[in-house]
Image (tube, rainbow, N blue to C red):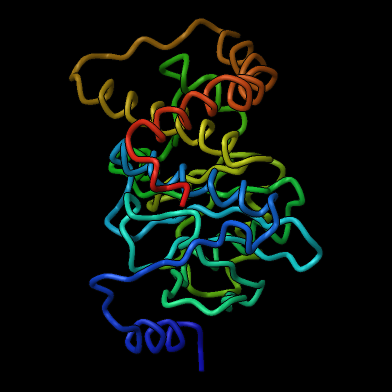
Length: 271
């Protein structure tokens, strides 16, 4: 059975979930895993808050510490605004749930995320989106242009991967990882955006900057006038500033603030 057949069989056999009681995993997993679950569930909620979700069809993941190389993915049947720390599905490197769960996971999500998690020890979190702005820039022949400070802060850390179809072919993982190299962001051509981080918060903030840069580019190019390009050397200086400052800003400043916001909006993500 090939990967597409397996995907179709898994989805076809899944029962529609109208309501489900999700028992809390707090105290049933390690404190370290629980903290990662809360952070990842928070990221799902903030993706929904910013309008970056695509119904149920994109995915964020985080690695569970340990030699097993398990990682957490969203339950495929839930909207991002419904994801909780306890509903996240822990899968192995073959994409199989480690523990019993009423949910299935996104096969394309497994392909993309497992590739990066297995190849990069620093890839504790991987996030992938299909926003209209991200897809628009992914369809642009020159990718992300140095039109704004936001773009220049992240542009030097972006890789590119050509489109090969819906990512359910496990053979694509090798090419995706090769194209990513040591970068922490990627534009999947004709597809969307991706970010990698040493923590959930770092990954989310990198993705935020990339998405904002894409949105600004689409707006600038839609204005109907010639755009102003930055002076020679400015993009390189700004890229270096981003390389040294973004991670600190993400971990110490932006992500804690985002978590406080998520708790104010709806603290159920942490259950």
